[in-house]
Length: 205
Image 1: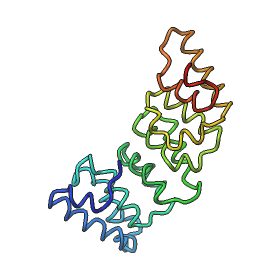
Image 2: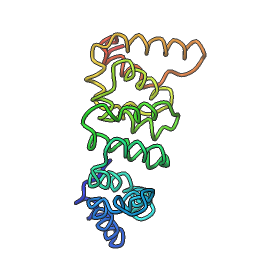
Image 3: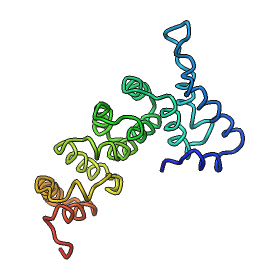
Image 4: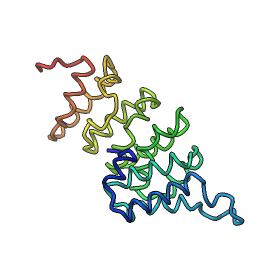
């Protein structure tokens, strides 16, 4: 869960809180972008990469989101950071997308994450940004991807809204359940829950 600045200030130790203050100032000023060396990495981007080390892994997602917002990171910057980043950095960036990009321009990042089998990235990719911008076909496959990889469907933002009345999603889920059953494998417990949301399975079933 992302934490707001006030919560971070209350939870971070003094050294980490001081580091965050400096990091946010650099992001706000976009320090390093006007350096003589055009290849120089902006200081705030170095802070983005090292957030976990200085503020702890439990706070890293929130700290990285604050840095991206303060830096007013645009889609090309987000894309570069995603492509160059570690799994932890990519996860934080995906979680931050709803706060940074209003339209669908960053969907390639979400789609890339959904092609991986990293459950951290898949869970982050099916959040509010995907709910708002992912097309019906891709969104249905994202739900199936969660079932494939064991990501709890609680991670899928606006699941009840988008699944409601979706007969095609119901068909895909039924086919998947049949394949699992035929292969002697367990059907994910979340599957019937989504079928119920589509309206194709009653709650009593």
